[in-house]
Length: 284
Image (tube, rainbow, N blue to C red; front, side, top):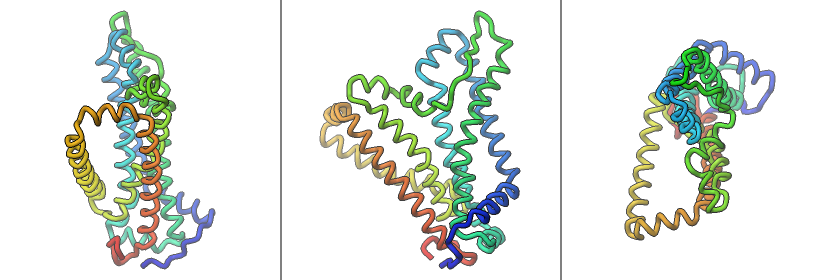
């Protein structure tokens, strides 16, 4: 068990943060440039694919850009979070991490800030810059047959994506599930990466693949169980019950998302502070 000091000191925290940013500036820069480049490419191709005024207006009306960027954000945050504790994969990295003068709490907070919170903030900046790049690249090609829409506000990404997924129209019939879905997705922005942050501590080697496999296996079991129950209860009745209780389901999902957020981050911290230089096993 690790017995390193667990207290927090602001000066040590900022020094550890600077050390992390300086030592990994190339990896961080390449990650951000890759995010920006992929978003730019997809936005340009998307605009070209919906070149006519009618096609573009239809895509904007259904919030297709926001839905895609939200799904991209979900995958990207999980991938980056799974790399947060990659130093644990090598003995030299573990020695460097665990023998530094900062406390375990400061080390954990620095990695969480850089690879989860920091990346989420940087992603929104990259998305907005990618959209402006799309306009700059395609602006001079527009004519009566090729339309380039103005900037899209990705700061409003999640509410727009919720409307795009159909919850805005559902609110006209069944209360206000869109509000709860928006809160759910906002919490999920931290809960999802928190799971992969936990995976990077439990399985430092091939963390992304192992965590995906564990999640996929659990979701498969739950999906099969739900299908069996739904078939026994009559699929049509289950479908109508879901439609008639959509807002209550969204509230329950939001509460479950809060539970996941607390569980993943709490376990991440608990297991990280038990790590040491010698053993990588999570049960030590």
